[in-house]
Image (tube, rainbow, N blue to C red; front, side):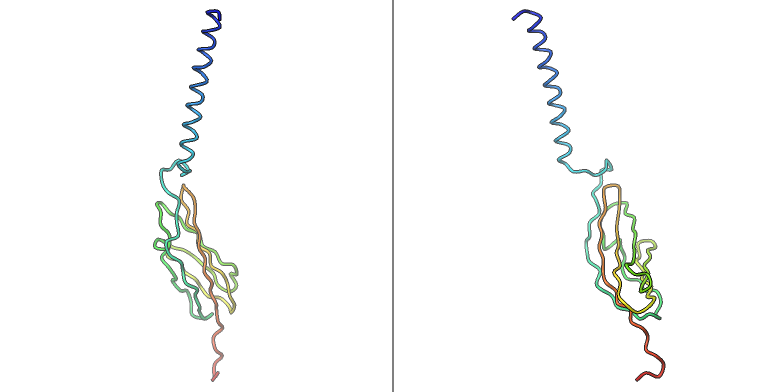
Amino acid sequence: MTHSAVQYTRSFLSRAGTLLLGLALVVSLSACGDDGGSGMNAPTVEQSISDQSATADQGAVEVADLNSVFSGENLSFQVSSSDSEVASASVDAGTLTVTPQDGGTATISAVATNDAGEASTSFGITVNLPEAPGSP
């Protein structure tokens, strides 16, 4: 081989080695999991919420402290009802409150999120109509 061909081959192999090293680093970092660059773990469900029953006229019921239901850092919570005519759901400072509306069943869902991901749990609620006055 000529002198310039040897130099070209060495230069090529050096660049290829650098590229492969960079690719190996990227693959290695991706295997560590995606935390969105935040350095924190995604929320997890630590305990379930039991199914509930209520009477339509009883008013709001505090059901759970979502800070105990989920674990993780910098959590924000969202709650929803599958049927807001049966029961509505709200969250304030991590406390999940359900307000019975009318007779029936609904599923209440709670979602915890942070920069690394989300976790969710749900439970059922049965709302009974109050007994009519004078009922035995």
